[in-house]
Length: 277
Image 1 (cartoon, helix red, strand yellow):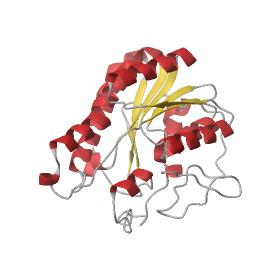
Image 2 (cartoon, rainbow, N blue to C red):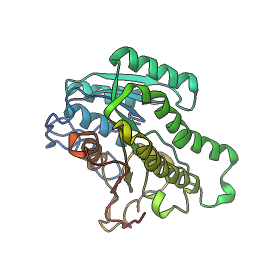
Image 3 (cartoon, rainbow, N blue to C red):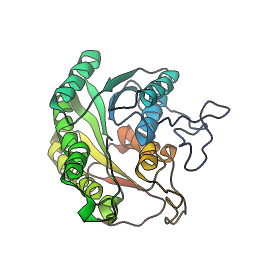
């Protein structure tokens, strides 16, 4: 599913729920990530695509890990290359060890190092009762959202030197739960614990680990998972869902020198929901 946005400057003026905005036409890069090498899982669409384009505008080269959508991946590559940066596409299933090894080998051969790892790949399937969630769904959700994230991070860790960044996408559901995304919310809670644990573990190596917890954001995943999203995001204090373009700058911040004294933290971008913990 394409999430390209068009306007006079080449990016789309979003119509809520129809065309997610990837980057604001007035977003000016300031070389915050100049020369950095970045891997983004789930980088072909939605938040991942927005992060890739923002990183490129800030001067970073990007490798996109994606599972299925060649059209979305090529669109991300086009947008990154339009910013004058390199974009490597690697297609496959992160739950498979052989594919994770392929990713590592390709990045190592191309760049020899990695500055920023963004763990963003994830899936969810809406079910309104626990009894409707099958064992297969539970295993697929956990394998994709957290188990492969831990393995993927472990595999890439030797390429990340002091000063490197690991940024993981969790969710507002990790803090307040979700009655229709029970297994998904559980994985997002696990990601939160992973962020906190790994940040402490890597502190001596000067590798910073942080996260982003989006609330309702317009992405292809939303449109694929829900048959009716007419009220999506309307229960937030801001009474609307957010755009990927409103989330990605926080990833830029955590990846940049501006966040040198931040680790083990999560930035909440959720339209005003108050969450604790």
